[in-house]
Each structure stands twice: as structure tokens, then as C-alpha cells.
Length: 71
Length: 141
Figure 1 (cartoon, rainbow over the protein chains, first blue to last red):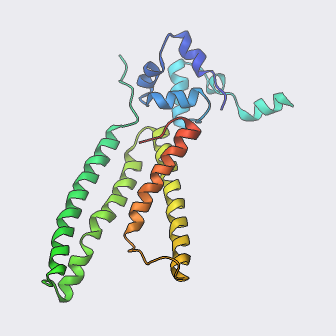
Figure 2 (cartoon, chains in turn yellow, brown):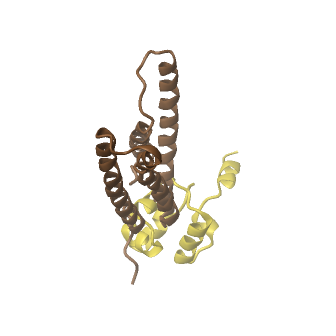
Figure 3 (cartoon, helix red, strand yellow):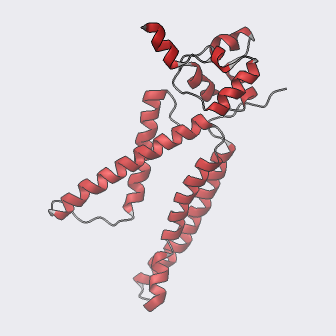
């Protein structure tokens, strides 16, 4: 799933390791989410949203909205 | 202050490895006397059945340890990698067993003891790890 995690992380000058520590997940998890290889569960997506103090939809791009835009 | 980032080898993974080590020691403790006892014809009757089955129990425990690991692993991405590995292992093992079964049935290959299926399963996990590495960039545990 497309997302703005890398941008939000960069704005705070956090490394993937820093973000992983804050979310209590592995650095590999952060990398997989950032690169769109892995879609986080709803609880983890909420943790990410709460950490960045943004609504989920400002971080993760809805696949249905993305496809409708393409049309 | 933040918590340290987890690694692919989590606390759950360490507990899993300790369990596997203990079960492996138990397996050796059951197997060696059984082999000796049967070789020297020291075990007969109902006891023979019990002694023959004992080495299988730690192996069954290893399957339980795998399930326990999946329950205890807190990192959902790492858990997904492991589940994918196990699915590959299952598909590989069932495929090998099916193919071998037919080859055996048509007397093209020799009969193989059933417990070798566990070794095939572990080999399948290795294949799953390679697939994870190729498709996701992370091999898993």
C-alpha cells in the first residue's frame, strides 16, 4: 500500500531504526511498510497514525481511491 | 525515550530456539536407549511400543514449539515471514510425499521411513526463506 511514512519519518529526522523503536517493531518491518511490500494490520496502522499525530488516511493511501484517481 | 527496535530475532525467537534445543536433547535421550535396547533385544511386549514411540514425542513437541512461536511473536511482519515459510514447507513436504508415494507404489524407488518427512519439512522451510528473500528482501528467521 502506498504511504507517506518515509516522508513523515524524514521530516522528524528519524532513521528506520528510530521509528522501529518507537513502534516497537523490527527495522525490517518499517522498511517493508515504507516500500509498500507489507501492509500493516489496523492496530499497527493506528499506532503509526497516533505516533505522527495524523489521521490514518493522511499516511496511507486508500487503494480504491488510488485506482479511481487513475480512471 | 524510545524502546530499542526489535530485530528479526526477537525474544519469542530466542525462546523458540531454547525449546528446540531442549526438545532435541530429549529426543537424543529417548532415541539412543531405544536403539540400544532394540538392537540387543532387551525390550519386548508392551514396553517396546512405549519405547518405540517415545522419540516421536519431542518431535511432536517441535511442531508445538513452532505454533507457540507464532503465537508469541509480537512483530507482525516477522510473523508473516514465518507463516509464509511454513506454508512453503507444508506445500513442499506434501508434494514430495505425494510424488514419492506414487514412485514407491510403482516400485521405482525404495521405501523411506516416515519420520524423514520432518527433515523434508525443514528443507521446505529453507525454500520458504529463499522465496521470502527473493520476493520481500527479508529471509525471515
